[in-house]
Length: 109
Image (cartoon, rainbow, N blue to C red; front, side, top):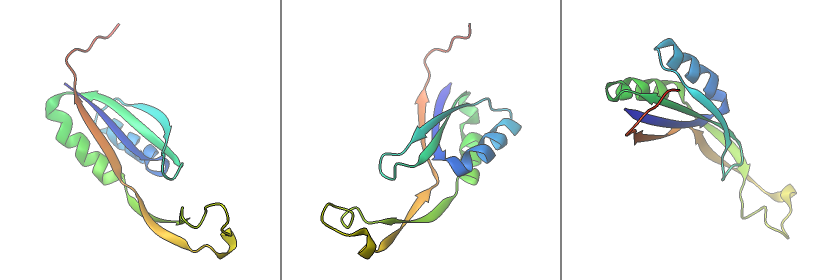
């Protein structure tokens, strides 16, 4: 058995959860936030059988999209600099960060 944690952007979470549910996966949704961009994320957690891992990863890949965002460079937002003259930089965000852990024991009460 495996425990999967998939961290995705909030914009992708609903479609991802619906896609996983439609294939019979039960998930737990946890609201999380990123440290770098301080934006909202969703962590999807699910316990699955080993032979289901590839299907779950395919669904996560297909529903977690990369996108471009703009932000003010951290260097230009330091004390003493004006935001009025700061140029936004383009960054790529999104996709999914996935952790797959072995489960030694699973109990339902």
